[in-house]
Image (spheres, rainbow, N blue to C red):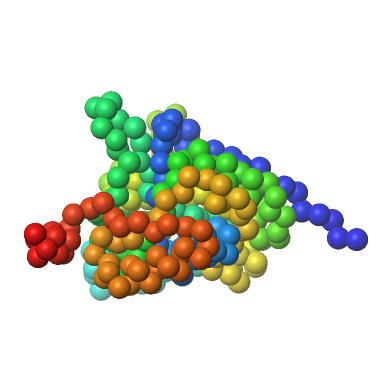
Length: 277
C-alpha cells in the first residue's frame, strides 16, 4: 500500500513586510488562465525559471551568477571571454535551484491613512500585459489566503513538499548588499529586482524537493473549491472591444460570474465617450 503524502502546511515568509488588514489582491491574466481558475477550479503555479525576469529565483549567495548577468548586461570584453565561459558553465547549477520553486503572483493593494480607497486597478499592470483581451480578478487577501490554505492542506500530490506566501521584496541586484545587517539571508523566491517594483507583488509559493519531477514540468495546478462563495470580482481590460466584452461576458455568465467593465478612463475610452455626447 502506498504511503499517503503529508498535508501541506501554509508558512508565511518576509514577516518584516507585514500585510495590512483589509488588503486586496488582483490577478491580471488572459482568458485561458481566467477560465482555468473560475471554471476548472485550478490555481496555477509557474516554475520560477519560466518567468521573463532573468533574475527570478536567483540564489543571492552565488555571486558568480550576478557577475554573469552583469557581464551580459554591460557587454563582454574579449580579454575576459575565457572567464565568462567558465561562469556560464556554472549557470546550470542556479537554474536547477530555481526549478524547485513554483509561484502564483498577485498584485497587492493595502489601506492608506487618507481615507480614500486604495483598491483600484493598476494602469502599469494592464500595460505590462500588452493585450487588450485580458482580465483581472479581485478578491480580499484574507479570502485568497483561506482558499490557498484549504487547497494546500487538502493537496496530497507528489509535486509539492511545502507551501509558502508573503510579500515580494525589491532590491537593486547590482548595487545593494545581498545580506541583512543581522546576518539573515534573503528568501530568494520572494525577491525581485527593483525595476519590477510596480508589480507590488503578493506571492503564493509551492516548493518541490524532487529535482527530477520539478525539471519535467513548467507548472503545478492545485484544485481549489468553493471559490464562488468568495466575494470575487472580474473586470475586463479598459480598451477591450465591445463585441468581445459581450462574448466573454456571456461565457462567464454560464458559470455564474459577472464580467464588469474596467473603471479606468484611457484615451480610447475617453474618445468613445466623447463620440456619444
